[in-house]
Length: 218
Image 1 (cartoon, rainbow, N blue to C red):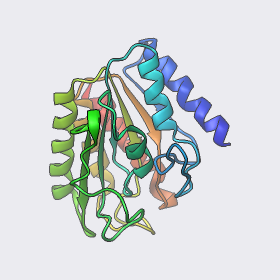
Image 2: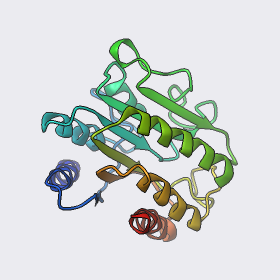
Image 3: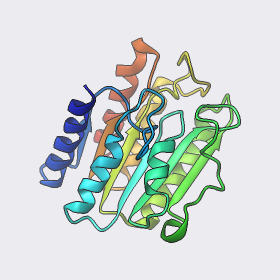
């Protein structure tokens, strides 16, 4: 399953690079963004988002951006690209003072060496609703826009939902429509990869709403 999920991400990236679609959704399990170069955690074993980002670079993209909207910080993705300037990582997530993985995701973590300024974290406290989340998302999108990437990867976790059993944000189903619209405003070739989401009945609704908002904004 781990190997097959990586193949799904790479196939989706290849199809997007061929130019026939402006966005593709790679749906798989397990999720990926807690996996580092030598670290597994949080159900994540191989970081397909990072693998796909590197594949974009190997295929000629000068810059790639990763926007992580999962409730938990993508510590593995951050670690992989922390000292690189060719991949921008932007993450919106539960504050590490309160949430897994606890040791990463602070706002002052901005990259190192050549990667200084290419790591952007928006940690938010329990109870964050759409108004505050939207403001952080808009700031994150502006950072992506200023970076001028050739492609965008979205680590799409829907565990920001208000009734998610292990999370503490308060987004409602319709908020994901607006999230998709905002991401579409970047006008970039976009690869969505599946991350978390544990309110089983609503996972499909919230994912489809994100993709529908993205599609309708086009």
